[in-house]
Image 1 (tube, rainbow, N blue to C red):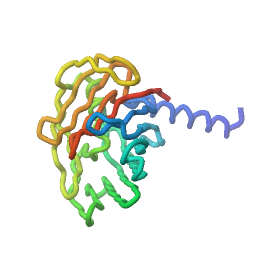
Image 2 (cartoon, one colour):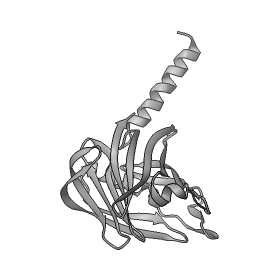
Image 3 (cartoon, one colour):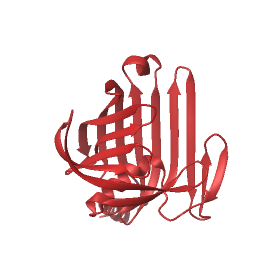
Image 4 (cartoon, rainbow, N blue to C red):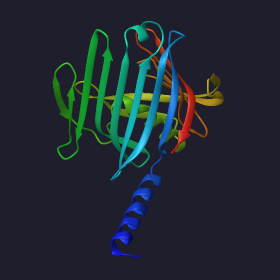
Amino acid sequence: MKPFRLFSAAALLLFAGSALAAPLPAFTARYQLLKDGSPIGEATMTLQFAGDNTWTFTTASKGTEGLAALMSANVQETSTFRWKGDLPEGLSYDYAMDAAIKHKERHVRFDWSSNTISVDDKGQHQFAAQPGAIERHTIVLAIEAGLLDGKHDFALPIAVRDHIETQHYTAQGKQQINVPAGHYDATHVARTDGGGFEAWFAPNVLAPVQVAQNDGGELMMKLESYSQR
C-alpha cells in the first residue's frame, strides 16, 4: 500500500474512533410540532460528528399549519460543542427565526483560551466562562448523556444573555407516552427551578421522544422518526 493510502486509512480510523468514544451517536430525529395541543409544523434534530472532537447539533423547525404556515415561520438553531466526559461543553450557538413580519437572531461564542463567553442578543455581552458551560439548545443532549451514565439530577451551567445561570433538572420517574413514532416507557425529566421545561427519554432512542416548553402557551415536540448514523 502506498504511504498516502496508509496515512488516509489511519486518519479515517482515528476519526471513527473519536466519534465512537462520544456518549451519544450521530442521529437524525423528526418531530411533529404542536402549540396548545394543535399541530403547527415539523422539526428535525440532527447530531453529527464534525471531526477534532467537535460535534454539531442542529434543530430546524418549520410552520406548516395554521398561523405558523401563514407567517412562513422558520427557526434554525445550530450548536457546536465538544464532549468533556459525559457532558457537552459549548463552542458556539446560532439562532435564527424568520417569519413574514419578523426576523430575530441570537449568537453565543465560547472562548476557552480566555475563559470568556460572548453573547449577541439585544446588544453585546461578555462575561466569565465556567467549565462545562453550554447554551439552552444543548440541554437535551446533556440530559440524555447523563441518564445513560446513571444520573438523575442535573445542575447545568447555562450561558444566558449576560451571565452563567445554573439550571436544575431532575428525573421524575417513568411515564407511558404515545407519540407518532410509537409507544414508549419513557423517563420524564423536568426543570425544577422554573422555566417550564420538560422532556421524555426512552431506551434505544438517543434523542428525546417528547419535549414540552411553556412559554406563552405550551409548545410540544413529538417524535415521528429516529435513525442513528
